[in-house]
Length: 148
Image 1 (cartoon, rainbow, N blue to C red):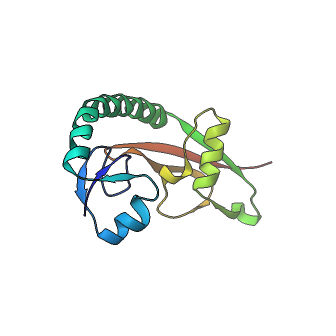
Image 2 (cartoon, helix red, strand yellow):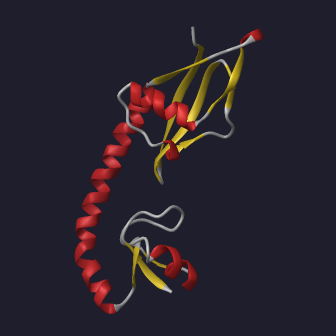
């Protein structure tokens, strides 16, 4: 089924893209959630008009993402965790902990875009990827320190 994306959808594409997906995926997920419209002559004509507006929106969103990436590349996030014997963490540092620490520092980042290969289980400085856009990825420094 040919559909037109109304919003950015994970690995499918960006707003305004015309893509082909399976009928079940479109009927059961994409259409009920309002993420797409069925590609027809009428809908394509409407989207052609809106595409110019969407392109401007994409450009401004990308500029904002690039500015945020610069800010995150220079920023060091400090996460305080309790430690036990031999400086071993109780638990681990995950994306939720990093997101909360960033919010406390005044940077609002959703934990879903923070990409950890594995939870952080030791003290020290770690580098974490933050995928702001499909082509804009920031390298955030996360410093895990002992909570007094």
